[in-house]
Image (cartoon, rainbow, N blue to C red; front, side):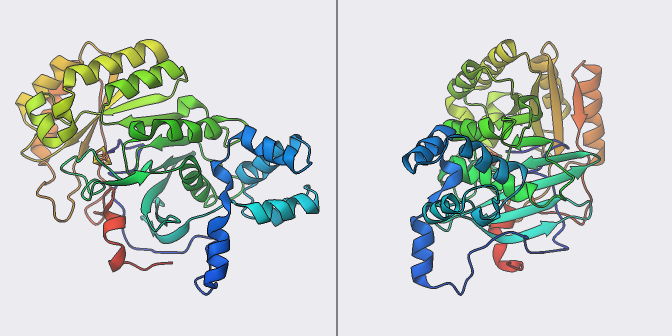
Length: 386
Ligand code: SF4
């Protein structure tokens, strides 16, 4: 996925500072036996609230302990069961024997000069994903991955270069949110979530919705659905499913081209779908949710940044209640795309604005920062690991 200025995945970061997460990691000196014990434990974050209550009842504990456990993890940022001081000692021991709260390891952290943190997370099976924390005034936004890799194959994206390995579990999605929250001082809270990291969230919709259900629950992270954005390349059946769920998440559709010929080149999955179907399902989402749609458009120098494409975009969008986020491309090593010139950016903007499109251009962060979505994962060998 790619993003607006609020968001992260095309956000450029400077590899100026690598620092370890202040979070539990599996000690590399642990014995193989210990590792296999950990691997045999269930990921607590994968459990539904009803699963957790059923487990508590089976063990002879009161239901309300479930709420206490969630409160400790999501609100009080407990990383170990031993910290849950108002739980009976026996329950803490039983939790310790059965579950892990955190199952991932931090491979690397990159902090940009503006204080944005990008994390490379290693999963239990060795897969790797990225997630990002952005600090902007009082906003504390996070960008979270939904899959290991991505099958959509957008030609300008580092995340999809090797295809998709698998969907993340609900717990792995939630764990990214917690890892990022835990980087904040106690008095700061996460304010916004964008499902716009590695992967196509609508290709893993059930688990994404499961994670967001807890993120938006007051007993979880307590973030309003109106402050949560799900980004998609545009999969109409899944967008319709999202409409039927009836929770007013924001929807961001990655358009990147105003006609099928060019879009199918840039976003290969479009060959089977077509822009009309994408826009139709997006319109239905707007009608159902009432949430203004966002369209994302990565501006590639000499590819989709001409007056012709700007005019076509005007025809597509001017009668729709949408925000168009235009993101001048950040070059990715090994990919043949370049940043558009200042003149073409200005002309593109002028055509859209005079055509009546509600458009916002994301500012580039600076020439010294050049790692886009998926780059940290690809370049991990060249950076410090934690
Ligand atoms: S390849 Fe996947 S992660 Fe990359 S921009 Fe396309 S949909 Fe997003």
